[in-house]
Length: 490
Image (tube, rainbow, N blue to C red; front, side, top):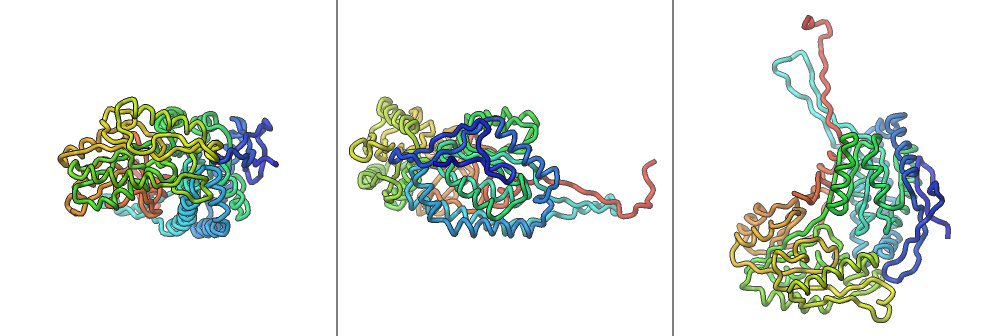
């Protein structure tokens, strides 16, 4: 099996050390591929290529917005042509179900098309200077420069598009680092970028361990911005490392999002969406609404329906399209099972699931039954910490004020959900939740046109929407003296 290589300066190259690492199907234990196991010297080569492409010839950043738009549309078209291949690859590499991958890859295409259209509509402005009528002042947007990108393992291809599409639309040069466990769709997409054709050094791919590569991207004086989706502790490390040249930092970090279910909610609908956010993608959703707060008047009915539906959920190999696939690795399986055992030890009532699946074909993979904990309290580990597994915690509330207080009692602030048939209640709750995204009577959907990001320790900046483009742009003021013969100050 030929090892997949890095893509640097328009060429496919092995890691300088010659080392490779194996990529395993987490559901079956089968070997999927071998990829370059890169180190700091490989990252530095990619950084140098990106820097030369941006500050040297600058072909990409000097290209018209319309020309860059055309390239991004070509990328979208080529991704769409092989979408089935990408869906299967994403499912096998991450453990997610094929249907889940279909939604993700569809959005990848949509995100590239959205930013291809938006960059044509991005405008500066003329600033009126009443005190100096002889001077014309304009504000323009320019690319930041060299952008390092670090993606997570849960939705790797989707995260590539959220970062690369707006950064490239703005005219930047990029170095993309996929998660060490799940690099395969990124490699395949870079084959598309190579086919479409970008100036040398504009698009670069490095595979390997996150610690050393991410640290080099964050600390390098030649990287102008770093954007990362991942855990809050890693985000904190990146902030510290980025102080080297005070680079721009964009972070989408952890979450422990609340869902409030009022007594007038459509309970069946609320249950469906709780399962959608907490069980789809095996619970590996940064916005997962895993802290569910239910009005005590409907608690028993809500739990009964949730347990019944949870027990019917199917778990299996992603390509077979069960409800829930495999966790991404044995390490993540150990982490999730550790949280489940912690919940039981701390006194939460496990009313569904709560165990690893090990019989038959399950023995080769990393499978957990979806788990529901009732009678939880705010101080429990399963309530306070992000699990990134198919685990739901339930608490009750008597008053709206209690629900808001409990919902906001977290260091995170990525998302939140509200289920009610009362419009005034819904708006009131959406105003009180300290989160960057709020869904009402549904949950977990993302839109290319709408900004994505959180409050507090859930990150810095926004992805998607117009804000997602602005993340990768600098703002410049240009002032022109219209009459060069006007007397000066001296």
